[in-house]
Structures are given as C-alpha cells and as structure tokens.
Image 1 (tube, rainbow, N blue to C red):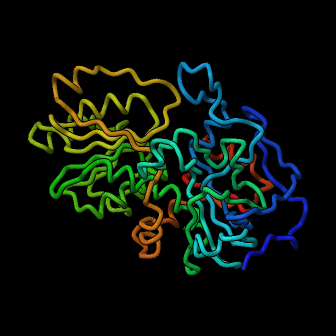
Image 2 (image 1 turned 45 degrees about the vertical axis):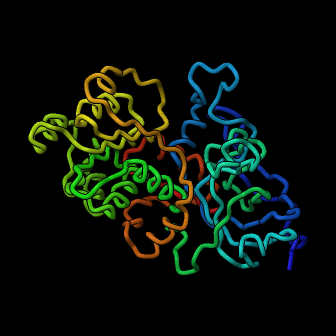
Length: 364
C-alpha cells in the first residue's frame, strides 16, 4: 500500500551547495512523494572524491564552455548513502520490492530511460541523466530525508548490514565495475594504483578474480597495510621504490598484464603506460583534477594496448551487497570517521587534507 509520508515534518536540515567552497547547513522543505517515488530517512552518507571536486569548484569537462563547474548549485550533495523507507508513492512498493521500514539504497545515476544508451541497457552512460548530489533535479543525501525519483534504480539492503557498510555499497559497486573492465585472467599480474576507498574496493574485488599476483600502489604506508588486508599480494610505495622497474623485474621485463588507475594524479597515467606489458589492459577510473598529458605512441605503435574507461557501478549493486554480507572487504578499516551532519565542515576539512581519513561518513 502506498504511503505518501503525510506524517513527515515539513522542514528538515540539509547541507546545501551554493557554489565552490560555499556549503551551508540550512532548513529546507521536506519533499513529498509522487507515483513511483520512494522517500527515505537518511541514516548515513559518505564523502567522495567527486564531492570534494564539487566543493573546490573543479570544472566538469575540461575546455567546455557549457559546464563551468563540477556540479550545478544550489544542490544538496551526497550520492553514497543508505536510508530507511518512510514513504512510497503509488506503484513503488511493487516496482522495487520495498516496504515501509526497509533499508534501501538508490544507484547514483537517475537515467532518463529514453536515450540511445538507456534503450541499449547502458543506463550508466545516459545522455540526459541526473546524478544525486550534483544536478538540481536529483538532490542528494546530506539531509535528513531524501526522495528517489520515478526513474531511479533502487535496491533493498539487508537489515544485518551495518550502516557504515551499507554506505559503502555505492563506492564498492564502482570498484567492482572497474575490475570487470580490467578483464583479469587467471595468472595475470594486476596493479591497482591508488588505495583510497575506491582503490581498496578494487583490490578486494580483484582478489576474487584470482590473479597470479595482485599489487597495490600508494604513497601512504598505512593505506598499503589495509590493501594487504583487502587481498593484495604485494604493496609498493612509489615514493620509496621505482615501481616501474620493480614490476618489470618481477615479470621478466614484460610488465604487468592489467593496470587500473585510481589515484586521480596525472603522473599515475604515465606510470601505468610505462609499467604495463605489450597488449596489456589499462583501466582509467579516476576523475582527474587536471588533464593528463601522455605519449600516445606507447598506446599504439609501441604496445598496442587495450584502454578502458570505467564509469559508475552499473549492474554491480547486488554484487557489492553480496561482498559486504560475506565480509570480503574490511570496511571497518576503510570507514575511518563518522561525524554528525552538523559537523560537515570538519568532515570536508578531513577529506581535503586526506591525512588520516580514508572514508568519512556523515550521520543526519
């Protein structure tokens, strides 16, 4: 039976992005659900590197005059979240298998359903889709309540999954998709560059592919320790070791079979091109803060590489939930900070500094 949430409050607290470095805790109107829509009370929301790019005002597309910023303010940020269902529009319960009181999550992109990509099942590349927390038609989860629109892709979350783990479903789904794009084979030497939350998720997902040797790279030894707990066979710090020479030495001079870039640093792209073997597979996942200039001759004439991009986590949410339920990734070591929504400024400071924080969760 539908419940429109008429018993919900009229006003809620929310973090609102008004522009670069202009985030404010405000009182805003609680939305109401229409047909096919779902309303949740937000229980936790994670901060992502893309949230920080929105905060700093990084451009959405380099060289684009149409989009001058990474998001479109005013907007409520937050696309990594979990909530408890408090209202269902007509048809929503049947469509999503949800009931009042269920834990639920919604995939970060709200696709149009009509464009060329959506019609082919490639909804994550929707030409006209909204993304929670970045577009004005899809307000995010840094609020007490959040509405999933009619076109959203929603999933029920098991009750036995702790909130801080459920919040990690979205980033882990992205990690799984990146690993899928790597087309890892038995016996492959796989290098994952970057051990932030997404890179660590990639290490855990790649472990399930049973590569011959799984190697994690990061400039921070504490993160490399967690990468070992995620399943890395070997960890290397590029500040201490010539990682290109070390990988070549380990592989009889050939280089790694698969290189997945998850640092967000342009120099990691060049590093990977030098490190990977001929006919290897390079996966680019990161959202770069500035363009990466590389020698494309390496990609073509010298090595004939397979280059894959990786965007979002399509069809991976059930897989991510399953990994978390089976405790195949040490989320407790990755979610390092839990703060109330009122301390969002401190959370942003921690995320920008990156010293001790890996994944930060806000609790409305």
